Length: 231
Image (cartoon, rainbow, N blue to C red; front, side, top):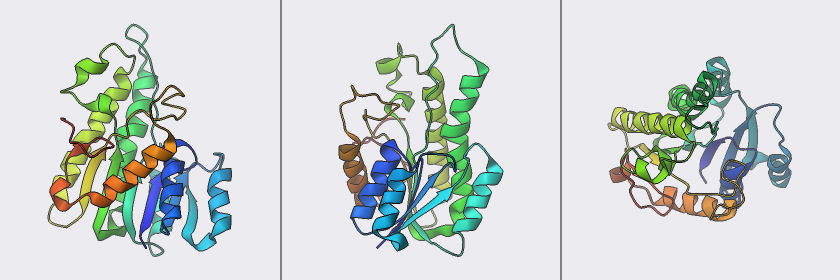
């Protein structure tokens, strides 16, 4: 039985990951805002209260992230940390605003970095730390998405990838595995209903991939099928 912490857990892919790990018999810690809709997480908790824990944090606040870490410390040792929470404030060139850029970077790259820092002491010696990134973050493949109004989002996820690589190197003395993972195009509020993968299918693929990761994979970027993506 593993202990898994997922951010952005109340809906979309975060909820799907919580449901998948819960169905496998693991202990799940779902993190979301206090004012977020939590009915689906509460439904899991009613099934087996000791294996589903709901914690609240505002990931735009370092103080809130540190308070979350205090709640986790002493209660749990985390085997899998999945920084899933993200935003995509889409603005086309000519309509860019500072607010959209800051929102993307704060949630998509700063918050996961501070989460890793705050929760580092709660990770087990062989923990897996997964940053949910995106194919649009790949600089080498940026021509594929150049016309999409995803500039701030892509830049923030590229920053997340840089953190992932650096954090993996900083953890290399341990057996902890740190990876960035693109879930593909998923039918969430962000991905839209035209996406090619359901939340259930994407969650199952991600959990399977996380289980297959070895220390040789640390510091790398993968798609949902396990193929390595270029930075």
